Image (cartoon, rainbow, N blue to C red; front, side, top):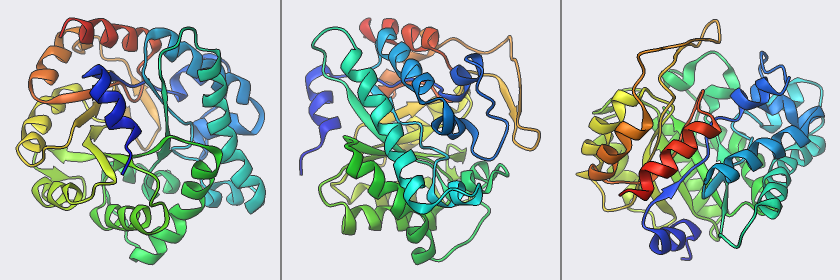
Length: 307
């Protein structure tokens, strides 16, 4: 099975992801304080999404993650948007990233990963950080399939199955990937309670052992967590798999999932200080999640160059 991610990793040894989308859209005047979050921009400001992707490519990112973390058919239909229009909006997110890639200077190969956020993101109640929700395997697959199909049809290079806190949901998505998207590969980034457990309490040993058996899963890691959680998580996961490890934490600010507000943390550690440790602990793909900016990605790029 061809894996665009592994091909690029073989060529460059270390890869850099982009950073936060919502943070930059908010700076550009997009109101993300609603259930659609950053996906709101797909409705009336797609050009601002393209501009954010461009800035991350300019900063040196090798991979762009589409603005579809919270973009699902069900979320759009809840806002009175039809199923067909919802699919078109998800595809638009891929087209925005493609346009940014086309405008990127130089002949550097760049990848586009289609974001598959968890069901908890649709609930918009912070449960992507607890995994405290329950559906059947089929119900999870019915939820995720339309978005995956739209991302595939629009030309995403791979899937980014990210911020996953619920093991049953992860099984459902992986099975869907295997059965319905045999030509696609993905990375999986987990939402963790600590360096031993997924947010729903499932031992990481069980989760990684499960994911490790699938060739379609190109990389495993964690995202959307505090910086200080990365090294312990890497050490745990590195001992359980030979697949490349991927990490993209938040910038160190503190988030309240109920009020949906951030508190600036002036004492947060710097990416430049932490990246060398993460690489020594096995990280091959490094980027940023919530609150990170093009400047943070530039800092990661500079740190990676020294490794």
